[in-house]
Length: 431
Image 1: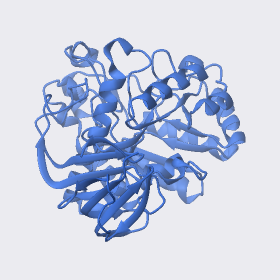
Image 2: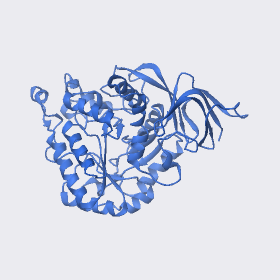
Image 3: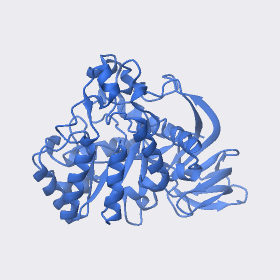
Image 4: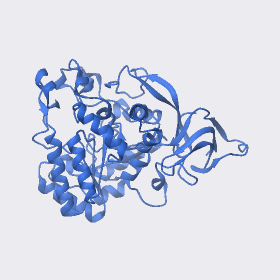
Protein backbone atom coordinates (compact mmCIF):
# COMPACT_ATOMS: atom_id res chain seq x y z
CA UNK A 1 0.00 0.00 0.00
CA UNK A 2 1.42 3.39 -1.02
CA UNK A 3 2.35 5.61 1.96
CA UNK A 4 0.55 8.96 2.23
CA UNK A 5 1.61 12.34 3.53
CA UNK A 6 -1.18 14.87 4.03
CA UNK A 7 0.57 18.21 4.36
CA UNK A 8 -0.20 21.56 5.98
CA UNK A 9 -3.81 20.91 6.99
CA UNK A 10 -5.54 21.96 10.19
CA UNK A 11 -5.72 18.61 11.98
CA UNK A 12 -8.66 18.24 14.36
CA UNK A 13 -9.30 15.16 16.51
CA UNK A 14 -12.42 15.74 18.63
CA UNK A 15 -11.64 12.69 20.77
CA UNK A 16 -8.38 14.12 22.12
CA UNK A 17 -8.93 17.84 21.55
CA UNK A 18 -5.93 18.06 19.20
CA UNK A 19 -6.28 21.07 16.89
CA UNK A 20 -3.30 22.54 15.04
CA UNK A 21 -1.67 22.89 11.65
CA UNK A 22 0.29 19.71 11.01
CA UNK A 23 1.17 16.96 8.57
CA UNK A 24 -0.36 13.50 8.83
CA UNK A 25 1.76 10.53 7.80
CA UNK A 26 0.03 7.27 6.86
CA UNK A 27 1.64 3.88 6.28
CA UNK A 28 0.16 0.37 6.04
CA UNK A 29 -3.34 1.64 6.75
CA UNK A 30 -2.45 3.39 10.01
CA UNK A 31 -1.64 6.93 11.08
CA UNK A 32 2.06 6.80 11.98
CA UNK A 33 2.71 10.44 12.76
CA UNK A 34 1.08 13.84 13.26
CA UNK A 35 3.19 16.99 13.32
CA UNK A 36 6.10 18.46 11.37
CA UNK A 37 7.35 15.75 9.04
CA UNK A 38 10.63 15.15 7.32
CA UNK A 39 10.50 14.98 3.51
CA UNK A 40 8.17 12.19 2.41
CA UNK A 41 9.77 8.82 1.68
CA UNK A 42 10.35 7.92 -1.93
CA UNK A 43 7.17 6.72 -3.57
CA UNK A 44 4.84 8.34 -1.03
CA UNK A 45 1.76 10.12 -2.31
CA UNK A 46 1.52 13.71 -1.10
CA UNK A 47 -1.81 15.44 -0.55
CA UNK A 48 -1.70 19.22 -0.17
CA UNK A 49 -4.24 20.10 2.53
CA UNK A 50 -3.35 23.78 2.92
CA UNK A 51 -6.49 25.71 3.89
CA UNK A 52 -8.35 22.47 4.63
CA UNK A 53 -9.46 20.60 7.73
CA UNK A 54 -8.06 17.10 8.25
CA UNK A 55 -10.51 15.20 10.45
CA UNK A 56 -11.32 11.59 11.31
CA UNK A 57 -13.44 9.86 8.70
CA UNK A 58 -17.14 10.50 9.30
CA UNK A 59 -19.30 7.74 10.80
CA UNK A 60 -22.93 7.75 9.58
CA UNK A 61 -25.38 5.62 11.56
CA UNK A 62 -28.19 5.56 8.96
CA UNK A 63 -27.39 4.88 5.29
CA UNK A 64 -29.57 2.72 3.08
CA UNK A 65 -27.61 1.13 0.25
CA UNK A 66 -30.66 -0.56 -1.35
CA UNK A 67 -28.85 -3.90 -1.49
CA UNK A 68 -29.67 -6.69 -1.33
CA UNK A 69 -32.62 -5.90 -3.59
CA UNK A 70 -31.45 -3.53 -6.32
CA UNK A 71 -28.40 -5.28 -7.74
CA UNK A 72 -29.72 -4.76 -11.27
CA UNK A 73 -29.45 -0.99 -10.81
CA UNK A 74 -25.94 -1.18 -9.31
CA UNK A 75 -27.18 0.72 -6.30
CA UNK A 76 -24.38 -0.49 -4.04
CA UNK A 77 -21.75 1.00 -6.34
CA UNK A 78 -23.46 4.38 -6.66
CA UNK A 79 -24.36 4.77 -2.99
CA UNK A 80 -20.91 3.74 -1.81
CA UNK A 81 -19.41 6.29 -4.21
CA UNK A 82 -21.76 8.91 -2.75
CA UNK A 83 -20.72 7.89 0.75
CA UNK A 84 -16.99 8.52 0.30
CA UNK A 85 -17.72 11.69 -1.70
CA UNK A 86 -19.41 12.93 1.47
CA UNK A 87 -16.37 12.15 3.61
CA UNK A 88 -18.06 9.17 5.28
CA UNK A 89 -15.70 6.26 5.90
CA UNK A 90 -17.97 4.01 8.01
CA UNK A 91 -21.71 3.54 7.72
CA UNK A 92 -24.46 1.56 9.42
CA UNK A 93 -26.91 -0.10 7.03
CA UNK A 94 -30.44 -0.75 8.39
CA UNK A 95 -31.91 -4.25 7.91
CA UNK A 96 -34.95 -3.32 5.75
CA UNK A 97 -33.43 -4.54 2.51
CA UNK A 98 -35.05 -6.91 -0.01
CA UNK A 99 -34.72 -9.57 1.33
CA UNK A 100 -34.44 -8.47 4.94
CA UNK A 101 -31.07 -8.92 6.66
CA UNK A 102 -32.25 -11.75 8.88
CA UNK A 103 -29.90 -14.54 7.74
CA UNK A 104 -26.10 -14.75 8.09
CA UNK A 105 -25.61 -15.48 4.39
CA UNK A 106 -27.26 -12.21 3.37
CA UNK A 107 -25.13 -10.22 5.79
CA UNK A 108 -21.95 -11.90 4.58
CA UNK A 109 -22.88 -11.26 0.95
CA UNK A 110 -23.48 -7.56 1.59
CA UNK A 111 -20.23 -7.03 3.48
CA UNK A 112 -18.23 -9.03 0.92
CA UNK A 113 -19.60 -7.02 -2.00
CA UNK A 114 -18.96 -3.78 -0.15
CA UNK A 115 -15.38 -4.74 0.71
CA UNK A 116 -14.63 -5.49 -2.96
CA UNK A 117 -15.39 -1.85 -3.80
CA UNK A 118 -12.58 -0.61 -1.47
CA UNK A 119 -14.63 2.35 -0.30
CA UNK A 120 -16.43 2.90 3.02
CA UNK A 121 -16.76 0.32 5.76
CA UNK A 122 -20.26 -1.19 5.92
CA UNK A 123 -21.55 -2.14 9.38
CA UNK A 124 -24.88 -3.96 8.96
CA UNK A 125 -27.73 -3.97 11.43
CA UNK A 126 -29.42 -7.34 11.64
CA UNK A 127 -33.19 -7.70 11.75
CA UNK A 128 -34.52 -8.03 15.29
CA UNK A 129 -37.32 -10.33 14.11
CA UNK A 130 -37.56 -12.61 11.09
CA UNK A 131 -38.66 -10.68 8.05
CA UNK A 132 -39.24 -7.69 10.36
CA UNK A 133 -42.62 -9.27 10.99
CA UNK A 134 -42.42 -8.75 14.75
CA UNK A 135 -43.17 -12.33 15.70
CA UNK A 136 -40.09 -14.57 15.89
CA UNK A 137 -36.68 -13.36 17.06
CA UNK A 138 -33.74 -13.83 14.71
CA UNK A 139 -30.62 -15.84 15.55
CA UNK A 140 -28.72 -12.87 16.93
CA UNK A 141 -25.57 -14.82 17.78
CA UNK A 142 -25.19 -16.13 14.23
CA UNK A 143 -25.92 -12.72 12.74
CA UNK A 144 -23.30 -11.13 14.98
CA UNK A 145 -20.75 -13.72 13.86
CA UNK A 146 -21.64 -12.81 10.26
CA UNK A 147 -20.83 -9.14 10.92
CA UNK A 148 -23.90 -7.42 12.42
CA UNK A 149 -23.15 -4.71 14.98
CA UNK A 150 -26.67 -4.51 16.45
CA UNK A 151 -30.30 -5.35 15.78
CA UNK A 152 -33.35 -3.33 14.87
CA UNK A 153 -36.69 -3.10 13.12
CA UNK A 154 -35.86 -0.17 10.80
CA UNK A 155 -39.19 1.59 10.15
CA UNK A 156 -41.40 -1.33 11.21
CA UNK A 157 -42.82 -0.95 14.76
CA UNK A 158 -43.13 -4.13 16.78
CA UNK A 159 -46.68 -5.36 17.13
CA UNK A 160 -46.17 -6.93 20.53
CA UNK A 161 -44.64 -5.51 23.69
CA UNK A 162 -44.06 -9.11 24.77
CA UNK A 163 -41.83 -9.68 21.72
CA UNK A 164 -39.88 -6.50 22.49
CA UNK A 165 -39.39 -7.66 26.08
CA UNK A 166 -38.02 -11.02 24.91
CA UNK A 167 -35.78 -9.29 22.37
CA UNK A 168 -34.29 -6.97 24.99
CA UNK A 169 -33.79 -9.86 27.41
CA UNK A 170 -31.96 -11.85 24.74
CA UNK A 171 -29.88 -8.89 23.63
CA UNK A 172 -28.97 -8.00 27.20
CA UNK A 173 -27.74 -11.54 27.84
CA UNK A 174 -25.15 -11.25 25.06
CA UNK A 175 -24.41 -7.53 25.37
CA UNK A 176 -25.96 -6.58 22.03
CA UNK A 177 -27.42 -3.14 21.32
CA UNK A 178 -31.01 -2.88 20.06
CA UNK A 179 -31.64 -0.01 17.61
CA UNK A 180 -35.22 1.26 17.60
CA UNK A 181 -36.98 4.17 15.98
CA UNK A 182 -39.61 4.99 18.61
CA UNK A 183 -43.02 5.11 16.98
CA UNK A 184 -46.26 3.64 18.27
CA UNK A 185 -47.70 1.19 15.76
CA UNK A 186 -51.27 2.54 15.92
CA UNK A 187 -50.55 6.27 16.17
CA UNK A 188 -47.78 6.36 13.58
CA UNK A 189 -49.83 5.75 10.45
CA UNK A 190 -49.99 9.31 9.11
CA UNK A 191 -47.83 11.06 6.52
CA UNK A 192 -46.98 14.39 8.25
CA UNK A 193 -46.68 15.68 11.78
CA UNK A 194 -49.96 16.47 13.49
CA UNK A 195 -50.67 20.18 13.76
CA UNK A 196 -52.34 23.13 12.08
CA UNK A 197 -50.46 22.54 8.81
CA UNK A 198 -51.62 18.94 8.54
CA UNK A 199 -55.20 20.08 9.16
CA UNK A 200 -55.06 22.82 6.52
CA UNK A 201 -53.53 20.48 3.95
CA UNK A 202 -55.95 17.66 4.69
CA UNK A 203 -53.15 15.19 5.40
CA UNK A 204 -53.21 12.50 8.09
CA UNK A 205 -51.03 13.46 11.04
CA UNK A 206 -48.64 11.65 13.36
CA UNK A 207 -48.78 13.10 16.88
CA UNK A 208 -45.78 13.57 19.13
CA UNK A 209 -47.41 10.99 21.39
CA UNK A 210 -46.55 8.33 18.80
CA UNK A 211 -42.89 8.92 19.69
CA UNK A 212 -43.21 9.50 23.42
CA UNK A 213 -45.47 6.49 24.09
CA UNK A 214 -42.93 4.27 22.35
CA UNK A 215 -40.06 5.79 24.36
CA UNK A 216 -41.95 5.25 27.63
CA UNK A 217 -42.42 1.59 26.73
CA UNK A 218 -38.78 1.12 25.71
CA UNK A 219 -37.50 2.78 28.89
CA UNK A 220 -39.71 0.62 31.11
CA UNK A 221 -38.43 -2.52 29.42
CA UNK A 222 -34.85 -1.30 29.71
CA UNK A 223 -35.34 -1.00 33.45
CA UNK A 224 -36.62 -4.56 33.54
CA UNK A 225 -33.93 -6.10 31.36
CA UNK A 226 -30.81 -3.94 31.66
CA UNK A 227 -30.57 -3.85 27.86
CA UNK A 228 -28.65 -1.25 25.88
CA UNK A 229 -30.80 0.66 23.37
CA UNK A 230 -30.08 3.23 20.69
CA UNK A 231 -33.01 5.43 19.66
CA UNK A 232 -32.90 6.35 15.98
CA UNK A 233 -33.87 9.74 14.56
CA UNK A 234 -35.76 11.39 17.38
CA UNK A 235 -38.01 14.15 16.11
CA UNK A 236 -39.63 15.90 19.08
CA UNK A 237 -38.79 18.08 22.06
CA UNK A 238 -40.86 15.80 24.31
CA UNK A 239 -38.95 12.74 23.15
CA UNK A 240 -35.62 14.39 23.94
CA UNK A 241 -36.84 15.30 27.41
CA UNK A 242 -37.60 11.62 28.09
CA UNK A 243 -34.10 10.68 26.94
CA UNK A 244 -32.59 13.14 29.40
CA UNK A 245 -34.64 11.63 32.22
CA UNK A 246 -33.64 8.08 31.32
CA UNK A 247 -29.96 8.99 31.16
CA UNK A 248 -30.12 10.77 34.51
CA UNK A 249 -31.40 7.48 35.87
CA UNK A 250 -28.32 5.72 34.51
CA UNK A 251 -29.93 3.71 31.72
CA UNK A 252 -27.72 2.73 28.75
CA UNK A 253 -29.65 4.83 26.25
CA UNK A 254 -28.17 6.69 23.28
CA UNK A 255 -29.87 8.54 20.44
CA UNK A 256 -29.38 10.31 17.13
CA UNK A 257 -31.23 12.87 15.01
CA UNK A 258 -31.34 13.39 11.25
CA UNK A 259 -30.09 16.30 9.18
CA UNK A 260 -33.70 16.89 8.10
CA UNK A 261 -35.11 17.33 11.61
CA UNK A 262 -32.12 19.50 12.51
CA UNK A 263 -32.79 22.09 9.81
CA UNK A 264 -36.37 21.80 8.54
CA UNK A 265 -39.91 22.10 9.88
CA UNK A 266 -43.31 21.01 8.60
CA UNK A 267 -43.71 24.34 6.79
CA UNK A 268 -40.95 23.21 4.42
CA UNK A 269 -43.44 20.82 2.87
CA UNK A 270 -44.67 23.89 1.01
CA UNK A 271 -47.24 23.02 -1.65
CA UNK A 272 -47.19 19.25 -1.11
CA UNK A 273 -43.49 18.92 -1.98
CA UNK A 274 -42.88 15.15 -1.93
CA UNK A 275 -39.15 15.72 -1.38
CA UNK A 276 -40.14 16.58 2.20
CA UNK A 277 -42.09 13.33 2.65
CA UNK A 278 -39.92 11.78 5.35
CA UNK A 279 -39.93 9.28 8.21
CA UNK A 280 -40.01 10.56 10.88
CA UNK A 281 -42.05 13.52 9.66
CA UNK A 282 -40.84 17.10 9.90
CA UNK A 283 -42.29 18.71 13.03
CA UNK A 284 -42.86 22.24 14.31
CA UNK A 285 -40.23 24.90 14.99
CA UNK A 286 -40.21 24.26 18.74
CA UNK A 287 -39.18 20.67 18.06
CA UNK A 288 -36.47 21.70 15.62
CA UNK A 289 -35.11 24.24 18.11
CA UNK A 290 -35.06 21.60 20.84
CA UNK A 291 -33.17 19.21 18.55
CA UNK A 292 -30.57 21.87 17.78
CA UNK A 293 -30.07 22.58 21.48
CA UNK A 294 -29.89 18.88 22.38
CA UNK A 295 -27.26 18.23 19.70
CA UNK A 296 -25.18 21.08 21.09
CA UNK A 297 -25.43 20.11 24.76
CA UNK A 298 -24.63 16.41 24.28
CA UNK A 299 -28.09 14.94 24.83
CA UNK A 300 -27.96 13.71 21.24
CA UNK A 301 -24.97 11.48 20.50
CA UNK A 302 -24.87 11.60 16.71
CA UNK A 303 -26.13 13.39 13.64
CA UNK A 304 -27.12 11.07 10.78
CA UNK A 305 -27.88 11.59 7.11
CA UNK A 306 -30.84 9.17 7.10
CA UNK A 307 -29.78 8.50 3.50
CA UNK A 308 -32.63 6.81 1.66
CA UNK A 309 -32.37 7.10 -2.15
CA UNK A 310 -35.81 7.16 -3.79
CA UNK A 311 -36.42 6.78 -7.50
CA UNK A 312 -38.23 9.29 -9.69
CA UNK A 313 -41.25 6.99 -9.82
CA UNK A 314 -41.37 6.88 -6.03
CA UNK A 315 -41.46 10.66 -5.65
CA UNK A 316 -43.56 11.84 -8.61
CA UNK A 317 -46.81 10.92 -6.91
CA UNK A 318 -49.33 12.81 -4.76
CA UNK A 319 -47.68 13.68 -1.44
CA UNK A 320 -49.51 11.08 0.67
CA UNK A 321 -48.78 8.32 -1.86
CA UNK A 322 -45.13 9.16 -2.49
CA UNK A 323 -42.34 7.07 -1.01
CA UNK A 324 -40.78 8.57 2.13
CA UNK A 325 -37.06 9.23 2.12
CA UNK A 326 -34.37 11.49 0.71
CA UNK A 327 -30.75 11.34 -0.29
CA UNK A 328 -28.49 12.75 2.40
CA UNK A 329 -25.07 11.15 2.83
CA UNK A 330 -23.35 13.70 0.59
CA UNK A 331 -24.98 16.54 2.57
CA UNK A 332 -24.15 15.33 6.08
CA UNK A 333 -20.91 17.22 6.61
CA UNK A 334 -22.11 20.46 5.02
CA UNK A 335 -25.34 20.51 7.02
CA UNK A 336 -23.44 19.86 10.25
CA UNK A 337 -21.17 22.80 9.45
CA UNK A 338 -24.19 24.96 8.63
CA UNK A 339 -25.79 24.09 11.98
CA UNK A 340 -22.56 24.69 13.90
CA UNK A 341 -22.08 28.10 12.31
CA UNK A 342 -25.67 29.23 12.89
CA UNK A 343 -25.95 27.90 16.44
CA UNK A 344 -22.50 28.81 17.71
CA UNK A 345 -21.81 25.18 18.64
CA UNK A 346 -18.47 25.40 16.87
CA UNK A 347 -16.47 23.29 14.46
CA UNK A 348 -15.23 20.82 17.05
CA UNK A 349 -18.77 19.93 18.16
CA UNK A 350 -19.86 19.58 14.53
CA UNK A 351 -17.10 17.06 13.96
CA UNK A 352 -17.75 15.31 17.26
CA UNK A 353 -21.35 14.42 16.36
CA UNK A 354 -20.07 12.98 13.07
CA UNK A 355 -17.08 11.04 14.42
CA UNK A 356 -16.49 10.27 18.10
CA UNK A 357 -20.19 10.51 18.99
CA UNK A 358 -21.41 7.83 16.57
CA UNK A 359 -18.28 5.75 17.28
CA UNK A 360 -19.27 5.69 20.96
CA UNK A 361 -22.76 4.56 19.99
CA UNK A 362 -21.26 1.66 18.08
CA UNK A 363 -19.23 0.78 21.16
CA UNK A 364 -17.02 -1.58 19.18
CA UNK A 365 -14.32 -3.06 21.38
CA UNK A 366 -10.98 -4.74 20.77
CA UNK A 367 -7.61 -3.86 19.34
CA UNK A 368 -8.47 -3.88 15.64
CA UNK A 369 -9.81 -1.36 13.18
CA UNK A 370 -13.20 -0.97 14.86
CA UNK A 371 -11.72 0.19 18.16
CA UNK A 372 -10.22 3.36 16.63
CA UNK A 373 -13.11 4.52 14.42
CA UNK A 374 -13.83 8.23 14.78
CA UNK A 375 -10.32 9.06 16.01
CA UNK A 376 -7.26 10.67 14.46
CA UNK A 377 -4.13 9.89 16.44
CA UNK A 378 -0.87 7.98 15.95
CA UNK A 379 -1.70 4.29 15.76
CA UNK A 380 -5.34 4.79 14.79
CA UNK A 381 -6.80 3.40 11.58
CA UNK A 382 -6.19 5.83 8.70
CA UNK A 383 -9.78 6.80 8.00
CA UNK A 384 -9.63 10.51 7.17
CA UNK A 385 -11.78 13.27 5.74
CA UNK A 386 -10.04 16.29 4.23
CA UNK A 387 -12.42 19.16 3.48
CA UNK A 388 -12.34 22.84 2.66
CA UNK A 389 -14.65 24.65 5.11
CA UNK A 390 -14.60 27.83 3.02
CA UNK A 391 -15.72 26.20 -0.23
CA UNK A 392 -19.46 26.58 -0.81
CA UNK A 393 -21.46 24.42 -3.18
CA UNK A 394 -25.05 24.26 -4.39
CA UNK A 395 -27.17 21.14 -3.96
CA UNK A 396 -28.34 20.02 -7.40
CA UNK A 397 -29.15 16.68 -8.96
CA UNK A 398 -26.01 16.97 -11.07
CA UNK A 399 -23.84 17.52 -7.99
CA UNK A 400 -24.99 14.27 -6.33
CA UNK A 401 -23.41 10.90 -7.04
CA UNK A 402 -26.26 9.00 -5.41
CA UNK A 403 -28.93 7.57 -7.68
CA UNK A 404 -31.41 9.26 -5.36
CA UNK A 405 -31.62 12.84 -6.57
CA UNK A 406 -34.46 13.94 -4.30
CA UNK A 407 -33.74 16.04 -1.22
CA UNK A 408 -35.63 18.87 0.48
CA UNK A 409 -32.32 20.76 0.45
CA UNK A 410 -32.30 21.04 -3.34
CA UNK A 411 -31.06 24.50 -4.36
CA UNK A 412 -29.45 25.22 -0.97
CA UNK A 413 -25.97 26.72 -0.94
CA UNK A 414 -23.97 24.87 1.70
CA UNK A 415 -20.50 25.29 3.24
CA UNK A 416 -17.75 22.69 3.15
CA UNK A 417 -16.56 20.63 0.21
CA UNK A 418 -14.81 17.30 0.67
CA UNK A 419 -11.44 17.28 -1.09
CA UNK A 420 -10.20 13.82 -0.16
CA UNK A 421 -11.47 10.75 1.69
CA UNK A 422 -9.04 8.11 2.93
CA UNK A 423 -10.25 4.68 4.08
CA UNK A 424 -7.76 2.34 5.66
CA UNK A 425 -4.84 4.30 4.24
CA UNK A 426 -6.22 4.14 0.69
CA UNK A 427 -7.58 7.21 -1.11
CA UNK A 428 -11.22 6.40 -1.85
CA UNK A 429 -12.23 9.83 -3.16
CA UNK A 430 -10.43 12.90 -4.46
CA UNK A 431 -6.78 13.41 -3.66
